[in-house]
Every structure is written in structure tokens, then in C-alpha cells.
Amino acid sequence: MKVKAAQATAVAGGKDTTSGCKDVILRENIIVIAAEMHYDSFWWKMMFMATGIAAAQGAGGGARSAHKTTVAYVDVGYTNHEKLALEALKSGGVNLLKVKAKDDLIKYVNTRPEKLQGKCQVKYLVQDMLFFSHGYPGVIDLNYQGSPSILLDAGAFKSMSKASFVPDGRIFSYACRTGNGSWVWKESFENDEACSPEKSLAQQVADHFQIEVHAYLTRSDYALVLREKSESENIAKTLKEARKTQEGSVIPIPPEHEGLPHPGLADGWTSFGPKKEGTNAYALWRKHAARSMPVAGTTPTGLTRAMRVFKPGK
Image (cartoon, rainbow, N blue to C red; front, side, top):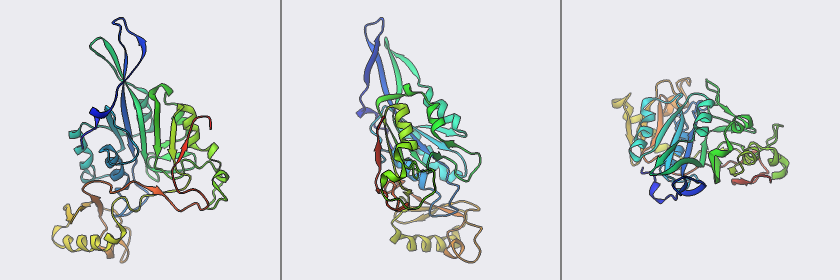
């Protein structure tokens, strides 16, 4: 879980100080983990948490080595058991930020700490910013179908200072359809350009910060971030059997999963679904966080199933 600060390279630039040295820019990655209040499910509850934590550990997502890593997470709907993996990041030097409103994130991006290092001025700027969240055209929704509303639209991003990013900064959105600019709800397009990517949130953000934004035109697919589908039957069977004697406890599911108690999760089902399966009131966790990053979904159809790179002015 160690932050790979030693591999990151500081950037010297800016005006000369009276000591003759130049301002030193250190690089910070910000990884944003949304709440998951949409899917009432053992299988899906921890999908954003798992991918965000894996990215903070350097296990995918696109973030480069940095001098500092901050995980900004929406503290809604997660139990204490589900947040233990976040706390464990601290031992690797990761900074944690609770997000209760969009202004918390905006303020953090805009507040770039400065300090003296010897006689030189040192400042942290944002290098890579990653979003693991729900979304739809024009919005990254950090608490979809939850309360309070935490919506990041073009206006929210434009309230973040352009000067907060290094010149080669990047943003990666693993939310659905950040690169899709169609305001008409459609489930099928003739080609990529038919969904108006030039009008998308991704393009507006790229133009504002003058950096690259990587985003999907389609929905994003988190189905395999926590387990292979072939493992599902055994995971559910192991959990159901163990609950006979371990109800309410964290339940090991060898070789690499755990069932985390989450009272009320999927309890709305009756005699079928999660209750029959034995997965209600629990959330699936993989002890090493995500096994893979999200991929492009299959819908809307007709669109490229890969991340598109949006560059400023294009």
C-alpha cells in the first residue's frame, strides 16, 4: 500500500526566489470514491471502494507515481467494516478526505498547500485525478439516488482553479457516459460522433483545465472488479453456510474474499433473490481490493467500447 513517492519527479519552475532557486512543484494524485446507493446488492456495494483503493495502491486506473496521494471518499452508506480498508491506506502514507458536499472536493482542489523547503518555495499541484462513480451525460454523480446530492457538472469543475493542475495533468472518469454529450436519452447511436462528444462533460473539463480527460462514451461496467462470475456460486454458498454460526461477523470466503456485515442491505427482497441466495445483509469484499479496473459497457450500442482521450480545444 505504499505511495510510490520516491519514483515521482519534482518539477522546478516559476519565478526565481531571492535565494536564487526556483519554485518546486510536487505532484499529487486525487482519487475520488463515490457512494454506492443505487444497487441494493451484496455483489455491487463495494465496487467503487475496491477500484479506488486499488488505484491508490498503484494497481491500475491510470495514475502515475506521485509525491502525495489523496483518497477523497463520500462517507455515505458505508459501514465501519467497509471503511477499514480506507483506514489501512494511511499506513502507506495516503491522505484521506471525507466528502460530504461537492464544495469539500472543490475547496480541496483549489487549496494547494505551499511550504518552504530550505530557501525554496514548494507547492503541491494535482497530477492525476480519478473518479470511480455513477454518472450520466453531463454529470458525475457522487451519491446517485442517495442524500445529500453531490453532483459534479461543468459548473462544478469550472469552479476549480485551472492553476491547480500541473501542465501535463490528466483526469480519468470511470463514471458512465462522461464522454457522451447527447442530451437526448438514446440507447443506440450510429457512431461515436452521433453522441456529440464535443459537447460532453469530458470535453468541457478538458477545455477548462487545458489537460487530457479520459472517459467513456458508453456506460461503464464494474461487473468483474470484485470477482470472476464463475466464482459467484461458490462465494454465495460459502457465505450462506458460514452464516449459520457466524451471523453478524466478518466471514472469510477463501481464497481471497470476505463477507462484510451490512444490516439492511438487500433485505427488501422476500423469499427469492438475495435472501434465498444467502447474501442479504452482507457486502462482498476482496481482500486485495479490485482485481481489475472497470471497462466500457455494451450500452448505448453503436459506440466505441474504450476510453476516449479528450484534449483541450478538440
